[in-house]
Length: 163
Image (tube, rainbow, N blue to C red; front, side):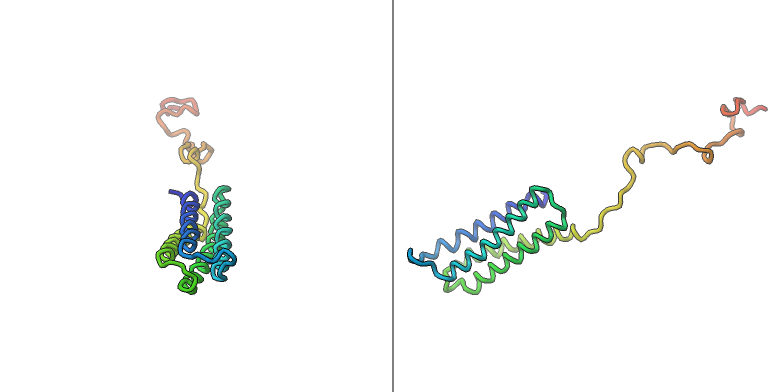
C-alpha cells in the first residue's frame, strides 16, 4: 500500500478517537465549557488543519520533501495535543482508554513520518539508459567495422578474400 493512500486513513482514525473520547466523559453545564476542554478543542483543531494539509498534498501527489515537512508539522501538533491531554486529563475528564488510543495513533504517525522523511532524504536516482537504448545494437562507424580480411568480405567486393 502506498504511503499516500494510507495517510488519510491514519489521520482520520487518530482524530476520530481524539474527537469522541473526551466528549463521552465530560458533561459540562450547558451554560459554559470548562477551560480545559476549550484548550483541548483548540489543539485538536490545529492538528486537524495540519492533517487536512497532508490530505490535500496526497491528493495532488506532492513531493516527498513536502510530505516530510507536512508530516513533521502534523506530528508536532499531535504530540502537543497528547501532552496536554496527559497533563490535564485527570481534572479535564479525559479517559485513559482515549489517551491510550491517541498515543497509539501518534506512534503510527511517527512510523509513517520516519518512512516518508527517509524517502525524502535519499538522493535522487541517476537516470540510466532507456529500454530502447539498452536493447539496440551499437551504431556502426569506421572504428567498429573490419574490412579486407574476412572470408566473406562483401564490402570490398571479394567474397572469398581473393584479390
